Image (cartoon, rainbow, N blue to C red; front, side):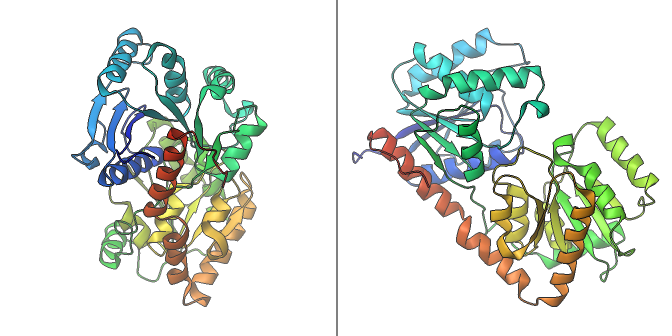
Length: 383
């Protein structure tokens, strides 16, 4: 690699709060701190995470106003390529991958880096548009100079579905352990606000309200948990209709007084700190899930469903269950609550695993090396 630092442009749909978006911001900030010239381009303006970008980073949007507002944004993208002159464009997720690949033919020369953030997105889990996008992604994948998946499972699944991964590498997410650490005061304050006593076991899930996240299965699992004092905190926003349906399910199961729907929460650290354990009950599609790793950085051990690299994330500090199996999930929750009481060092080991395996510094170092190798046209070794 030459002495001059690379000029890299990120492309993603938006900077609204989400796992992939937080990872992009952490990576972009780290590369900018290392002297790279970084630009972040989104389809839509604004976004909750915009203010967390380093002032060293160029911020641009395509001015998109709706799903089918296309011509103007496409022209804006090509104009930005001409003006910014990136050596590489790093797109995040399927629509951005497709846009970057399709318009590369009309732009000045640059390397193309795709980001794959999910696994196991099979036809049964996709609507017609998603199926079409996936087929197009498969066809255009050979145009990518580098494909970065955020999980080994995601990389393997992409390959099994026909996506070319000859230039593929797996780099797992990185967690900011300075931001995510246990805050007992904040956790106690949240328990008090929700009317939860200090001795009551608390389970939490931080995930958007979306059928993919399996909240309904989690409620069924919680209903059969053999602990009438336990509480469940559900943090995450979503469609009113889905929230109403889940609240009705909780009431039908007799859980209305022990299940707390918080909606969107900016201080997820407080949620994790209020919890004895956390859970991610997803039914499909996870790569390397952020929420369990963030909870673990706060010393909160986790139960995850057996998707993507979730089992790797929790390692021997947590428990797993097959997706969609409420009884198995309930058993896993019960086991982990028991371990919190019987293993005094579990919280320490839980945080230590994130510090060792999923640090932001590792994410930045590994990604930087992969991109520099691609810019130098040196062969990549798949992790």
